Length: 321
Image 1 (cartoon, one colour):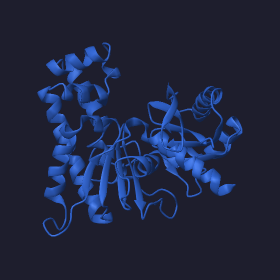
Image 2 (cartoon, one colour):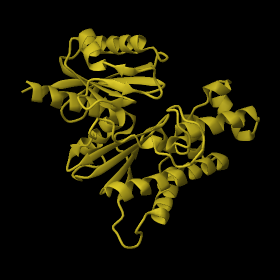
Image 3 (cartoon, one colour):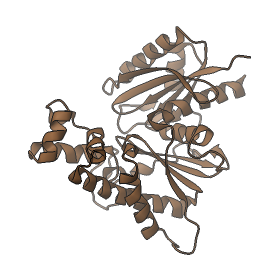
Image 4 (cartoon, one colour):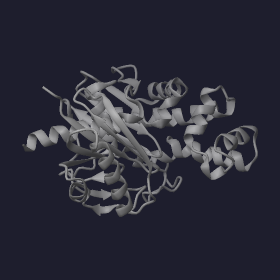
């Protein structure tokens, strides 16, 4: 009996990744494109083209879209996306009309958390919190092995918890959000400033980015830290401290068995998680008198979002049939 295949789409602020995913969480074919600005119609057409190409070689039963934004409880509408121009965007309906497939829309971090619970770092642990460190910070929650989306579908927006009153402005409209201190945008900001200041590290980052400061991103800083650059390692330590503090707050509220850290910034590995674990243990309420959640790196890497979106879409399609 052949296995049902689904397509997963992971839409971020800078890139869109797509893949054909089987029932075991394996990605059989891939597509990737830059996010075309903030125009919803252009994003939809990019998704449609990717799906068209993937369907040429595979029989697909469902399409899952993991979007960086607030998704309503029905899994149909993007209520608000801080990094895209989506406001009450009926993405399920428009994507289904464009592709001809049953569509399930999910918050991208929820999709990643589901994938790590099904196939990755959190397998067999019923209570999981996923934190994704990319352009911003996303979050996903599983309770008793079920995604927890909240009453209105927007639970898990950890990146927009305020950690510094009157702090740095955030794209969501508030100030001092966690993602302004512990995400890829922090590394991007520091890297571009170093390039403009013509520091030694700034020069290397500028070269890695092709000579334009505006093309420096967090991934360049992560690569520099992994290669042993002392200043980049210092930046990773600072972000790791902020990450650990935020994780301790989440543990105080939710008491999960495991905290999974994913997203592009997590590629720094122990350069990030070492400081995070120290800050977590230092700031966790009730420390010394409670069992601490494990803090682990996601196993599925940058494809967790599309894997989870595809699996959830396949599951949703089966429930509807």
